[in-house]
Length: 408
Ligand code: PLP
Image 1 (cartoon, protein in one colour):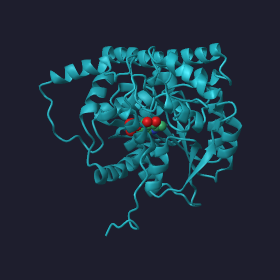
Image 2: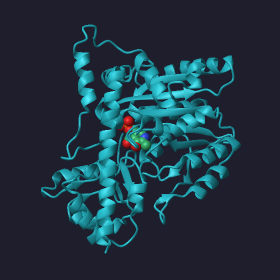
Image 3: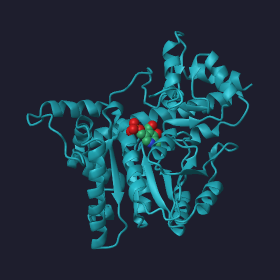
Image 4: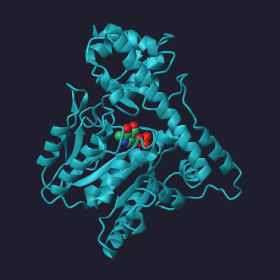
């Protein structure tokens, strides 16, 4: 049945291809700047000390078993996750207008949201879903898989290597009334470029004026600035403004729980008295059916760890310290890279390296420069994106010199 015509060979995922090429490379100088996971100063994965403490605590719990979680997941986890992203004193939580579902990490949260919107969002004029150009490539696949048409709004300016704010506002304004607008809550992937608070206010205003529906993807809370509250500012501002919205929340990066697939999806109803609470209840009832048919119920282990930390003030404080360690190391690498390039007089401007935030930086390196770097055993994606976490005190000089050579 599945001949070449029916099922053509799919192209290899570019990132996984890059990782395979890195593994095959035997050079002692090799540098992996593709990987979207935190590495310590020795280029090694880092198990957060707070995660070890939480695991220790779990191991000592005689009540623990391997039963199924409820369809919506571990309640102590989802309620703490909601408080974390929406704010502890969020009016949405107080007024019971939030529906939270534990998901298969951030990807599963984006998927559950996309599936729900594909099924229930009243797209009377067949409005598309709008993504920033560029966005995390998986957004295209996830929303495409559920049959929602996709469009983009301008986001990245290749001349300033910062935000094309005018283009973004115009693009969102030009989208047909009632479009779904996907926004990265912080540490935009792949560019590392975030709007300022003042710009977020204007974005909210244009979304409101066009009756658009905001869909926040939040994969880096606390990992971007090191400050959980600051990284959730945009989401909390939109809620303050009374938006009905959804949030996909990942705990992969901020807890280093990549493989444990720990995430959450939140639907927040607009404030409208008792009706808002019943809207959230109805939405939850439909999310439960979608979740049941897709995964039945989510995995327990990562949610137990995150829950242990989120619900214990001492562990929470330890976690905040761990977040500052990760984000601080990355910010230090950004400063060092910019400084090195400026000291060498490397052609071009390099302020964007420190202006950008989070795991990734859009360096502005062209595809041919990326290929030159490959000859020096440096692995990054063809769009010039580097994972800052791949840089450390041992390879930063080498990388800086190779960039200098590649752009001259
Ligand atoms: N959304 C964005 C923008 C991301 O960058 C990522 C991870 O790279 C995710 C969602 C989801 O990641 P995960 O499924 O590992 O939580």
